[in-house]
Amino acid sequence: MKTYKSLVAVLALSSVAFGGGNISPVTEYENTDYSAAQEVEVVPEVVPEVKVVEPVVEEKVIPVEVAPIASAMMGGYVGLGATGIAHRVSANSAQSNVFRELGCCQDRQMGVTGVAGYDFDQNLGAELRGTFGQWEISNGKKLRNVGAYLKPQVDLGGVNLYGLAGYAVTGSGTTGTGDKEGDFSYGAGLDVTLTEEFKLFGDLVQYIDKGKVNAMGATAGLKYQF
Image 1: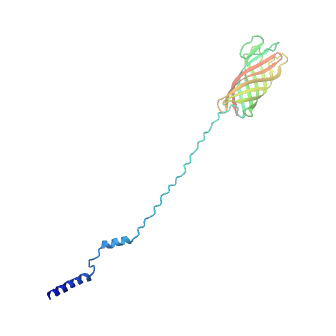
Image 2: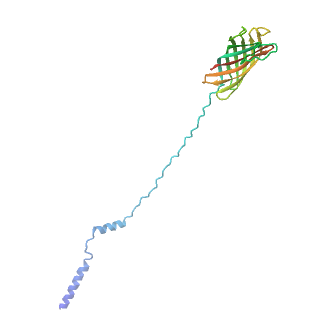
Image 3: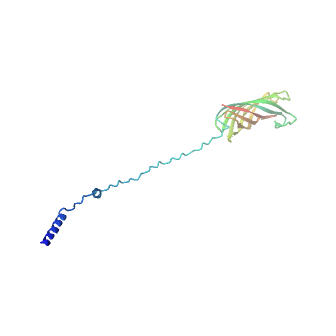
């Protein structure tokens, strides 16, 4: 009987133990882990940043060439200069020389020359000239010369070389065939630029070489371009 009661007690205790199931409370961290396992982690897509590089525009510096002031600029001009004159009358029509004394038959004197001209371009111009002897006159006769010329020229960048070719009338009272005599006249010279308006000039001109008469002049002066 005692053995039977013991067996019944063991069975009763076993029923109580298994009938309640899991009587332990469910902790919060267990529920959190379960929920986290059910969630799908959304990883944001990382879009790489596209860096816009603006094109570099290089500014090309074009050097500006400054042309030298041309001596033979288009336009009109006037000028005035001092002139050494050599005037010779001889039987053999000998050449006069403005730079030295020749003795017989030559008169050297000082005068002034006025010029007025127009440069059509850097290669051609036209000029009027008048020369008047005033001082150091040995024979008492003042030379007078008026001429019109074409003026071919070439500009060398600040220096202008030119020639003169035209017709001139020369008079002094000692021409031998009258007071005035006309003849082909020619010469050469140069201009040196000082500013856009002013330039120095110098030239040598054969006024007349006809019959017994020969005359020439060397002039240095200043021109004004307008």
